[in-house]
Image 1 (tube, helix red, strand yellow):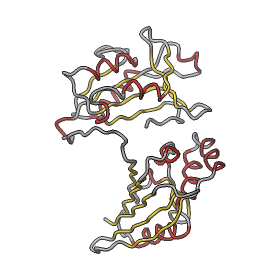
Image 2: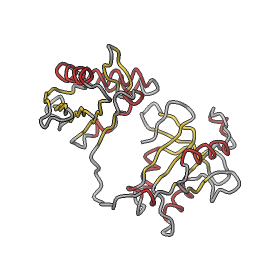
Image 3: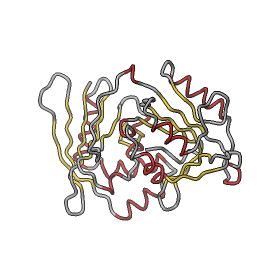
Image 4: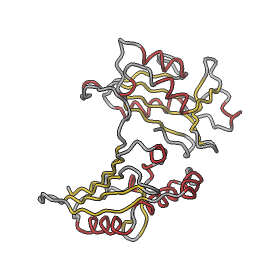
Length: 275
């Protein structure tokens, strides 16, 4: 499979230099080109306003990245690839501005249109942001997989203009997707090991007799006007607990094994995605 790599380097003055490398199967040397990523304050404001519109967000982000030589190189790589073109996006620097962007929504010029890469099977897409943690963890094998699933639909959801959903059906759907991977559930249904609260989540993750490698959350959530993400979980009495993403991460970060856990969120509002 041919590979198309874009590396965003450390910021230089008002932009970020980028290096593009197109590696073709059977050839040792990649085709290399260079360019710049330019994002103005107005661009960042526009991206924030497009958070609930994935295609518009991704198109604006794509037009800042795929410019001039970088765009020509991508279009040429697509034209030459008889099979899928694997695209990799690397961000060298831990730049706070770039880390806040939703790169999973990135669009690219495909057949004359700006298409979401995450939905296009012709271009398997992944991006990498260097971890800022100083911890090292052993690799996780197939037999190490174990999931903790939290599903929250509090009893007073309508107070926050959130529609209640079928918790048991959601749990069954996640279990079906996990297949043979064992899992424990935090929810208000029979068989759950606890309630879907942030305290219970931390309690289970702190248990040294349990080794979870996957977290999956199903709940309502939204991005607030200030850019902060909020999830709506439950308190001990099953009423809404609005938890900011920063608060959640602050609670999870000190836990022993959190940074080697893969975690994802299923949202029921279509304008929130877990990071």
